[in-house]
Length: 460
Image (cartoon, rainbow, N blue to C red; front, side, top):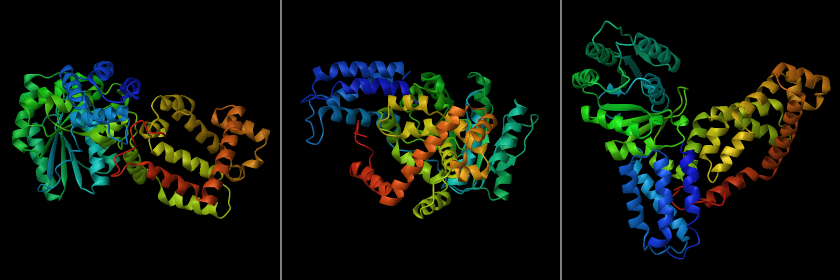
């Protein structure tokens, strides 16, 4: 998400560095390029106009802070305005209401609404420790009911059965009654979608909303539709008292126009973003972190939070102890590291959140992509346990067998063994000299006071 916008903005903002003072003349060209970058990202025109004017008013005539160059001051202003446009701070669900908290999910067909219900159920269960029930009031698509039942089983939450011959209001009321009996904390109600907004659809969802009076009414919209996403959200907001928006398919949206337009056009906060098909691919939307990513400054906080949730701490501690005792980092350990990386969203997911990567992340992804990580794992899995523990025994005949078993070439196996040797040396250095601790301390020292992220265009 935002790849195109990040590249354009980084190029534009680079040109203003080196000025002694920010004036209307020396920021005019940069503002024009920022405006074009936003329009190309499919940000709604009224939002672009207001954004540019606001940046201009703040930037022109500002005295440069002693510790910053004018270029960095201008980037700080752009960053602040991006945060303001996207909603200032993370807007969470109201889970403090009397249980069961009823959440109504609305949206057009094809936006990924049913999948998002399952993702949200998993997030509430795992991160907020809530008992969650889901129900489908989509009586027009029996397949949607079956899909939600399957997904509910996958994520381990309660599913309330419904059928196509029932009335949506009756389904929802029966689910609420059952949720109360079972002491469920949250009830997520999936609704019918259409290919376009029509009176029949709006009439039905209004009737359902007034009958169950949900605490949260979330609009699920496909980010890839750009500013149309904001306009569709506006139409739904006119019919329903929306409390927030969930942007889906953000991993396929290189422009990011929806994220920058929805809040400004609807006045409703983006509460979550979905990036991927897996049920763990839903994250709370943090405007300040997203602004940092747009400007190529990464998203270190989200990376740390993701690591804390997804990395196997026990395995990491065992590996550290093993190497500190003088034992080698073997290919079993290497495979564990590859699997941990996959859990973190693969190479692309990691690089996207690292500061200062910009175009480097695209170049790095071309050389070390997720397909390549899968090949490495396949080669290691094609080895015997003895070969994984003692890679030095792997001779040419063994290499041929490993390559045949993993669908690769002997050159690939040689490359894997060479990479492993390099990692083995690196691991020894980290544990012997405490280099990892020193490196983390150094990164912490680069953070500005208050932990607000890496400095703009930081020297990573």
